[in-house]
Structure formats: structure tokens, C-alpha cells
Image (cartoon, rainbow, N blue to C red; front, side, top):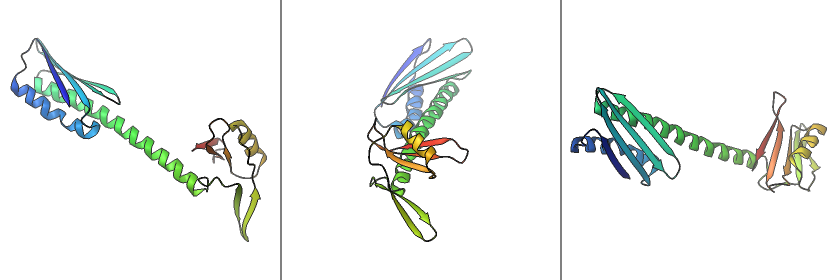
Length: 179
């Protein structure tokens, strides 16, 4: 963690420096050690402004606080920065969860093995039918889904080479799961 503190029209005291460093330690838990901070403190008449710039490998964030007290301004700026950082972290975590969920759905449907058979459950047992082995475009899969009675089509995408699942949602629109 690298912290640079700049004071405009104000002298940076050791107490302010210690306060800033203490408050910025929480960002190491979120982003790790590879982060840089630039803290700009400014005093103009009754307005005391603190601006905190965070730069990491992933993103750049800015938080600004303006109050009548320097410590309150610093705290306000850091709180804004923390909200932005946590929002970004939750988006990253949610994205990972979505990717894992998509992969697990694909595995549950037997796509991981790239099965060449479509299986449908009937009352008397399992009915097996041969499926096409050639790769197809998404547009061809849409046509295939519209022509069949099945709620989904498993196919190998001719553009990416990945196994995809095209399915019909309850509202009638189509969904695509890429793997």
C-alpha cells in the first residue's frame, strides 16, 4: 500500500497523517497490497475538503468529502470510497457466481460430456434420440428449437467451438447458456 498525502493551504500534521493511514488500512482487505492512494487535503475559508484517489490493478476510484471539520471530511471521503469498492467487489463476486452457476447447469444437463443424445423423461422410462453432431450457429439453433417440441437445444457453437444451450423461457423469449 502506497499513500501520498498532499496539502493545499494546510500543513499535514503527524496526527492527520496517522488518521489517514489508519482509515485506509481497510482497503488492503478488499484489494490486497497492490494499491496506491493519493489524498488531497484543501482548506478554503470555512470549507475543508478531502479527496481520496485509489488506484489498483482492477480500477480507479475517487471519494470526496467537504465539511467544516478536516477529520469529518477525510472520513466522508473514505466512506464514499469504501462504498464504491464494496460495490465493485460484489459485482465481481456475483459475476463469478453466475459463471459457476452456468457451468453447473451445463454439467447437470450432461453437456460437460458433450453427449450426442437428447434424453427426455417419459412415464415408462427414458427415451433416447440421436442429435446432430455438426457444429451450428446460434441462428440455426433458434430454427432447430422452433421446429422441435423440446424446451431446449444443446449444440456446439460453430463460431466459438463451445457447447451452448438454447432454451425457451416461460415468458416465450429465448435464453442462451454459453460454456
